[in-house]
View 1 (cartoon, rainbow, N blue to C red):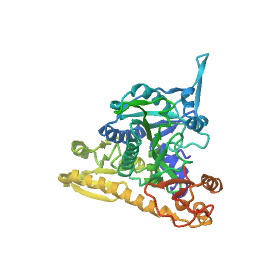
View 2 (view 1 turned 90 degrees about the vertical axis):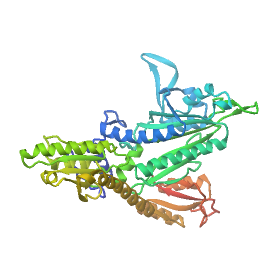
View 3 (view 1 turned 60 degrees about the vertical axis):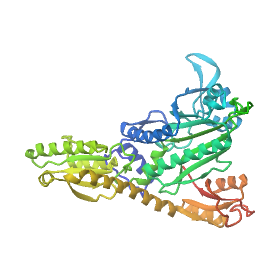
View 4 (view 1 turned 180 degrees about the vertical axis):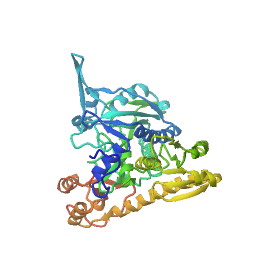
Length: 481
């Protein structure tokens, strides 16, 4: 990758290199000495903080509480749920020694927390009065990535939240799963401006140990899908081995029903790829930690006092209005250098204040998404900045929605499915018999998987795309990250 300050690769020409440049040059993250690990820089962490603040508020408003559970998990816990253990063992990092002393039992570094949390739940749940138990955790997990890693998109360690709940009935668990999926969809679409397809994972693709998995899938400019978030009904697959029982109102003992769900900093990768341009990042205003950057423009020393007074006032007014401004009054950099830096970092709106703006009692607004300029009178500052921010948010989502819809194509034969996947990418709507063998064959032959089965059944329109037997489902196939 080039060491030059600005972007040197066109997004349409080399998405991979462009993406890496945006992540590092916009100072979202940097590489670690250990392969697969990254350093989350302050600006990147501030974007993650915005995501966390929004989602944390939704979860708390719906009755969930935050907790924290240990990083190390006894191997015997992972083995209690057989499918879960088989699915995660290839990705687990193991702790075998404490200093020079070998441990009597291997400890897994948390790949996910179902087992350690359900062990605690087995002690905390006694009666129907204890339910529902609704806990969320903000932490990091480690999974051994043997494929190529990329910041935010695929790393060995990643930040995420994982929710774990306990319910009296399957119906209660079902409602929890779909409610959380709705929270995630609001976060992804309304805050990050990334449109998604919602649905169920196939049996092959569901979370290991789950009864079923719901998912949100986004499409990237290179025709590959990204799994944005998942919400799982775990059934009684964990409550039985961990003995999570409650005494019901009928005075009988019942196994509980559990759920788990999560989103990670992978959300950032979709935001970067979908909205960024050849100048760098574009952060949707709703989630942007800095919504407005204010840049003073001096031509003569005598202008400084008046301009500095005005830019400080503008920053105060915007902050008082509940917006998130940043005043860039650094004198060691030229205005042009600042413009390029903040464009690279994707700040939605720039406010320019020069001598004429002081004289005319106005400012100049510049939108990051289309670079439209607008002269705004001082008394209309807050209103016009808000209009710009909402306009950018809406424009980003509408543009991405058009792209998502354009990425969905229909295949009525296997050759057509193969041709679309190999030449155009995107989502391919096709019919499937429900047999995992057909699903496996498609994955092996063309590298596409069923990304989602719609939440509401869609009418089949052909026989199975692979085996030509009667079809049961309409699935959306794609290659993915």
